[in-house]
Length: 137
Image (cartoon, rainbow, N blue to C red; front, side, top):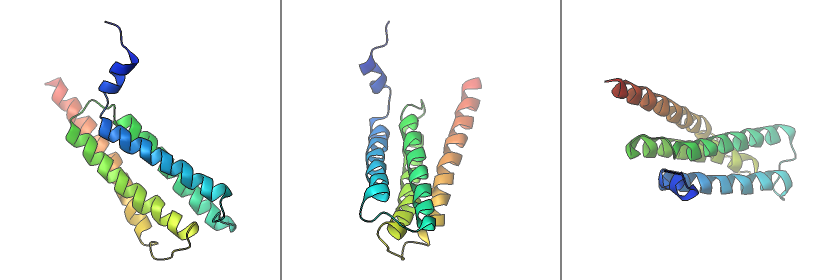
């Protein structure tokens, strides 16, 4: 049986894929604002910070889109998606707020967001190892 392009999307978790696509759109908009907009940081340190926020935002966006095709239960995918979404919002969002919107209050959220990003990776690794163990039986 031949694989059609429409069939591949049926294998994906559309909710996770949609979150990834929306996250990608937001990342591109914020990257454009950081590079060309009136709020673009002029300070080299602030620009470095926003570049880090954009990089991690895009990396986890791509991770979400890959996660949508992981053949595990929906609970695993949705839990990891939630962890990464909270992580992106707290980590990258707090840096965007600090550098682009000059809001000092979200600064303490940055390391908490980083923790959520790490927990998402740990969750995916744990799920992969548990599923592998189950398949061997």
